[in-house]
Image (cartoon, rainbow, N blue to C red; front, side, top):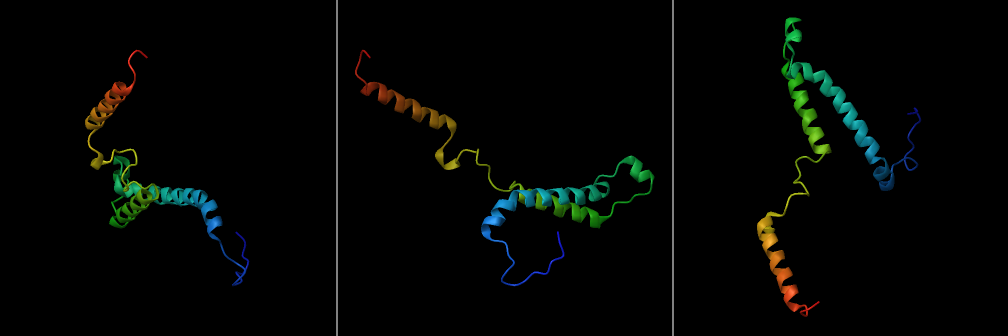
Length: 115
C-alpha cells in the first residue's frame, strides 16, 4: 500500500468494489486470525515439553484464543442453521416418502390402462 494522502470526495470504495474484494479480504482475515491462534495455542494446550521449559498458561492468551475462535465461527457462518437440514415444519422424511408414494399411486390411477 502506498502512503498517499486521502482526498475527501476523490477517495472511496463503492459497493461493487467491496463485493469483488470480499473473498480476498475474508481470506486475509482468516490468515491473520490463524497467526493469532498459533500464538495462543501453546497457552491453551501446552505440551509436556512446554511445561518442562517453564511455560505457564496465561489467561490473556486463552481469552484471545476464544475471541479468535468466535470470529472464525462468524466468518464461516457456523452458528447459522445448515441449509442441508430438512425444515422441521415439513415433517419427517418417512412422512415425505409416504406422501410421494400416495401421489405416485394417484397418478398411476389416472393413467389409461394398458400403456
